[in-house]
Amino acid sequence: MTEREVRVDATTLRGLAHPLRVRILGLLREHGPATATTLAERLGQSTGATSYHLRILATYGFVVDDPERNVGRERWWKAAHRSTTVEINPAIAPPETEGYLRAVAAQYADRVERFLDELASLPPAWGDACTISDVPLRLTAEQAAQLNEEMFALLGRYRRDDPEAPQPEDTERVVVQFQILPFPRAEQ
Image 1 (cartoon, rainbow, N blue to C red):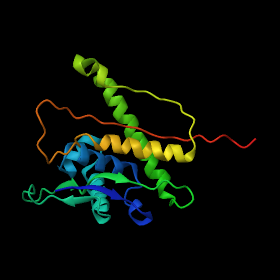
Image 2: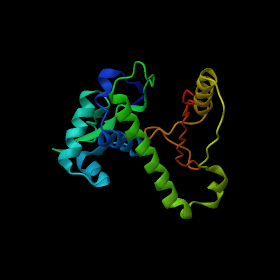
Image 3: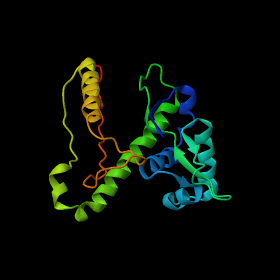
């Protein structure tokens, strides 16, 4: 069974601070276990590159071998956790934090592009269920932290996407992306 969440620190963040590793981990979480060859095909990479990055992810505990699927020399990998949490405090964040966050942001942008590519084939019932919106707010740091906490609490009330658990037939996979992005005013 895959653990729910991993909180990264300065040491483990080194294992994620590469765009290809973030993409590999995302695919394993979204589509379940895969081989280096399967991941290479999905990502347009060489098997050697995906194999190398899988080993790095394994060294830092983000992916694990899936022995139930291994056949002969074929090695299957799965995500060790369903999600990753990173402390974004600029005063104490390691330098790898920015690289990791940029890779995650690129993955989010790719996900929006995939959604837009498939928009025309979306069943009509889902038309009112999706949005790409932004809502500018004026908040204090404390209010933004409270909003963040409340958003996670709200999302926690819904069924998690877990490829290892049976899902009712009438459900579809939905991804909620949200960002709370402060843009402090420049000192005048």
